Image: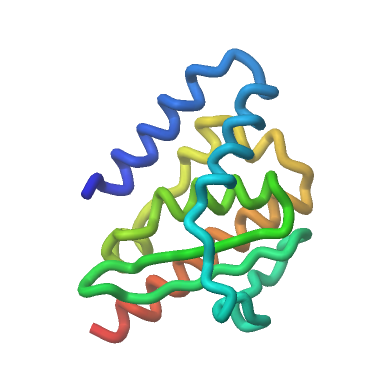
Length: 140
């Protein structure tokens, strides 16, 4: 399994292939289409991320010593953003998720392209993923 840093670098390299934001938007939307879907049973109020303009469900469970995330959103752009985060953090150790930085989001230029409400939603998604990891880490 690649490290969080390696996955983030792969994402940065992918986005560097695009000269303009239209191509990057399309890539984010395509990533959302390939997101492994959350089970319907996990699309509950408890799994809704607070602070997002769109409805975003995030579920986490621990498999051996790794945290595995599944997610979904009712908005295609947001679904792509959560797909990027799931790709980055799912299958990693809880401690690595808690300690990880998310500078790759700035490096691909995503944050500056988002409206303030979407940017807040992105922060809420990262925060929730780290909170799940922190909870699993404290179970050790």
